[in-house]
Length: 129
Image (cartoon, rainbow, N blue to C red; front, top):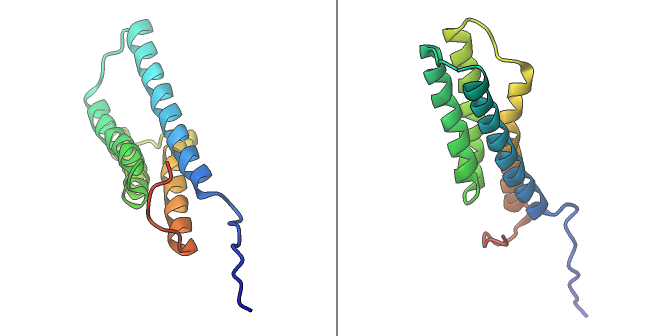
């Protein structure tokens, strides 16, 4: 007699996927709140270097958005955008941002973990969102 037993996954990949999405939303909202607070409270005047930093962060945020549907591409873009943000800071203001800025890569890492888990588990690529 042949029977098959479905082995449950050790970790639910949807949990990783939703953690990535939630952390991306939280990071974007916090970043927007900080920029708006600085603009309103301190009459923020953006130096030229800030434009390059904004472009790098726009790439990070685009990676977050792309990751909602394509974890591999979105995660890679978010991580590379974070590395670019550090490089832009180093080149333009000759200083690295605070180490906490590395958290911008966290949703990208979670997207990649979800993609890798789905790829190695043999699960169907259909979305379970």
